Image (cartoon, rainbow, N blue to C red; front, side, top):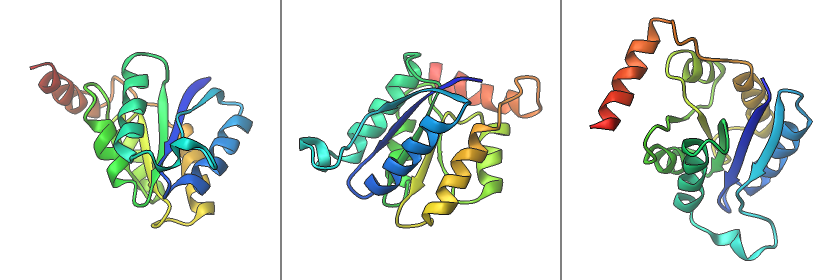
Length: 154
């Protein structure tokens, strides 16, 4: 698959976002990397994480991106923000099994990582693994994901 991936962070996740964006640009499974910021030395460096998380969710909702990788101090704020956008499923994950299940069981489009929680090499590995998973709409998990989607439409 040639994913269009949004990346974003706040000032607590800037170092990781830069490295993960470089990794994604070099990955043959990625067609495009859309960097929502923040950017080192730019006026947006102190932009609050909810603005980035919401913008990433909107990019997915609107079909401008397929997935997003977001980084803040813990990943929690980014995941909470992206999850506010209807139709978007975001998770924080810091281990391989959770990354796998975020796609295979929950069809999450957003992976949020914590720069203050997980080491850089592990974060790089988790993102690479995450790109390798695709959700099977015929799986037993599909009905569960549909319940969430149905609730959002109410």
